[in-house]
Image (tube, rainbow, N blue to C red; front, side, top):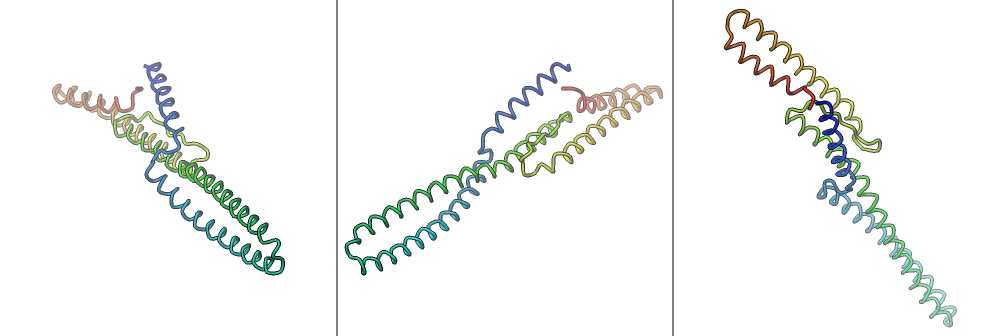
Length: 196
């Protein structure tokens, strides 16, 4: 049974780690947050580029009035500067997208792990341990979660022992039918904490 549990744990570990490598765990929320951040940064960058472009255009006009022979060169420089600023803005936006997805993954990935463990507990498996990554945003939940699981496991073990003892006492009292019913209930509690 221990080898089955180790195999199951290895399988769970492989399955979980392969899922956690996807950066878009909760696609809708993560992309929604990323789009909001990118939109805000895009507006700020557009305002910055427009302000710099306007300032350059104003300076170009002043130079062109004093030195008309430089007008073509100044326009070409302004166009080049504008294209460079747009390219830099696009690079910054790309970096913001990547970083935003990574940051939202720190929460969504942890929520995914917690949900997965909660489903196992709901299915009656009290032999789970939550392990979150160092950089996960809600890592503070790891210890309380694991303490809760241990308490549930301990309670199920105590219930199993109490029901088994009660079944023996009832059987010794001459009521084997009720004792058998309690043994079945005790066995069900025992399966909650037994090695899977």
